[in-house]
Image (cartoon, rainbow, N blue to C red; front, side, top):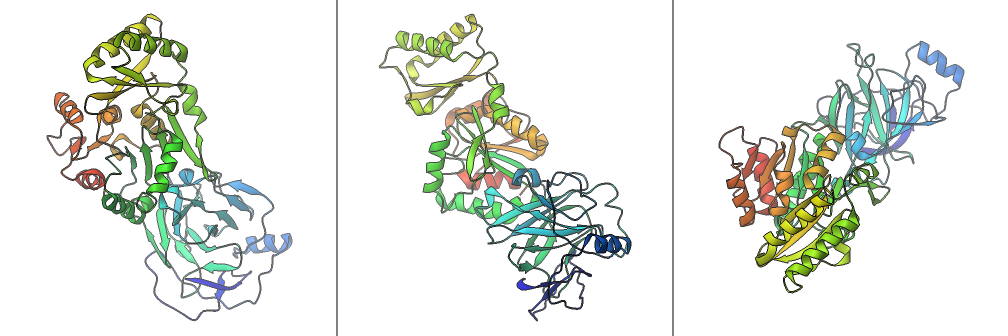
Amino acid sequence: MIVRGTWSRTQHSFCSVSAAARTTKALVHRRVHRPHRQFVCPSAEVQQQQQQDSVRHTSKGKSRKSAKQQPSNGSQSSKSSGSLAAKTSKGNDVVLYYCTGWPQAKLHCSVNAGPWQDTDFAQVNSSNGKWCVARMQLNSVAIQTKVDQPLVEFVVHNGAGVYDKPQTGGNYEISEAGVFALRDGSLHKSSGEAVLLVSDLDDTMIGDDTATAEFRDYWESEALTRGSLLVYNTGRAVDKFQELCQQKQHCLAMPDMLMSSVGTKVYNWQNGSWVEDAQYASRLDHAWKLDTVREATYAALAAAGREKMHFRPPEEQNDHKVTCGVHIDVVEQVQQQISNSLGADGVKARLILSGTGDWRFLDIVSINAGKLQALEFVRHKYGFAHNRTIACGDSGNDKDMLSGQNLAIVVGNAQPDLLKWVNDTQLSPDGADARLVITEQHMARGILEGLHTFGLK
């Protein structure tokens, strides 16, 4: 319930001007306290006395700390460092998802009857502005709660005197660690597994707007609030991806992270824009010489002839990727010549072939780049197990990330070359424990089918 009202200093409960009342769900306890007309910031002496008496209180914070740090012994404000840092529950942490239209929401909470503090929520990018998230890190002492007191007690406010609290009064309460969601006054513990979903875009996530919207609705209503991460792994450059987002804003879920340019770029969403991950970029220089790769590619073009091979436009090239269009008649010749030339010069690279018809895309990328390499980088960064990481694709340039130890979904409209590869490498499912599934449904509906097959939907 969203209301305006005042806050009790001594009992630290919100006093609503609304008389509405209804029952909230499990894990939400109600306490009713006598009203106070205004919020008063207690002095240090009062705070000390209140702590000794185990009376809940609040004060204005003098410093801000990351939500990754342990709760302090003083009342202060902490700021979440970003939605991805807060999204999954680890150990004894409490992660809270909050559905709101507020531009900035603040979590006002007390852990194990300790000092009250404000924590900023971080927007969840894959929620299209609907959800935000905050983490409450708990130390080993904090979880040793008494029978008559909650592990975490909290309300939410917008920083301007508007609070979200149980309609029956008192504060929201959580009695155990885990991932929780608060929406329309209902607080519940999230069920289901948190997953890292890494999907190709063209003809996998997009291609059928209705199916794309169905996936978005599922993600925002169920998967997201379990602590799941959505990542797009695309051959598009970041500017082309942003153009696509504008075109598909009516149906496409926004990702939490972006892997682009055939796994040569990884981007984090920071302060309203996509920022390249410097740690990933630094790995790609190993055994890579851009000038040598270009020279080898020019030599292959001269041998094949310009009617059979060409460089793709400049926006498709980058410091760790050279991309060409190659006619099917000379594909093997071109690949072999480039591989031999680079090997002789001590350059280690991946040659990735994709596309259908008479013309194919040939991407020459750093040995440490590629869709699987980018997937593994993100998987390690956020601590997802292989059996909770799912790659989804439809074409030859998805083979890389579909061939890892992670789970894999090949959508029903997959290109013949990818299906042939699945059959040739005997990756098609033959039992309940198979890690790859070929779906009946196409595009985004195929992703939903695959998640259901793996028991992760």
